[in-house]
Length: 387
Image 1 (cartoon, rainbow, N blue to C red):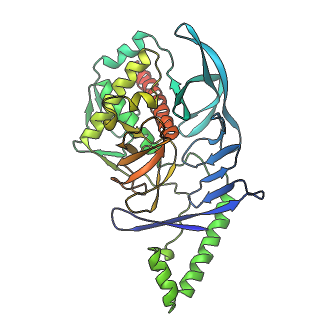
Image 2 (image 1 turned 180 degrees about the vertical axis):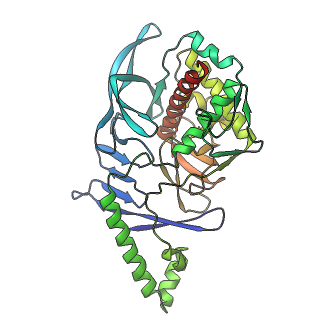
Image 3 (image 1 turned 180 degrees about the horizontal axis):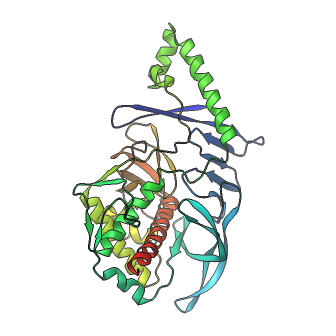
């Protein structure tokens, strides 16, 4: 069992932890976290369960993934296939979706939805880059017609109220600005609200009890034990911090996140770029971003929970959906990960300004998720504009 200690910007100490169990044959391990996450690693695949994400996901050694709802229902699976693209045959990854999400609820699809991903090699690694859905010119034309939208509490398609801007937004006249704010705010909101009850709640409850017993043992043993106090000091672990209740699955942790105006403007520019790619049916790959003259300005929006190490403090930290990171150093061919800077984050995420390392595969997943969220928000916007 491992304690994780993180000092929040307001000076409070946040303590969490996990239990790691080795596979019997010694070829992998499973970590069960107190926040409800579960990660299993073995030579054939990695399986991740996260109450903040709609699906448990298995990533196989060849990069293909399959997803299941938290109740075990199949959600999607991927295969290698060939399609006709730009007048030539191209091998791609095809994702077959059998369910979708609506208002944090799993909705079965009447017919499967097919998504396609380009296979993009970069040095020794290969990433899968999402191909946007094909739409006609009129679909995009609606995004350039002025609107009149007042931001009110009963506005059904305003961005979730989880962002604080330097200049509060009371009115939208430009659909692109609205679309940009929706795409920025929606993943942040999703990174605060669990999709469903945890599938491993009994195991989490048992783990909570184990951690509580460990706390009591340390609290008892530390009394007058200068050697143990010294060991805790070496680990930068305040004995009082271990008296804090262990966090479980937080079902009501909506918060407001400060987003600077230059970050908001950068996301808008990336929305404009993404729309241009979509109109041409082009996929946005991590290679496109890395080789761009504006690579150092690009903001990546976290899609799935990432455990990282704050290179400045050496402490573990976590990023969740909606947090924003940018390149600290732009990677080159041969790199499998990148040095990143945390630009915008939630209270219990890695602190803003922290330097961390993130795999290029994860960065590509962020690009894919960004474009897919953009498509969902465009559908929502069209539904209301057309009324």
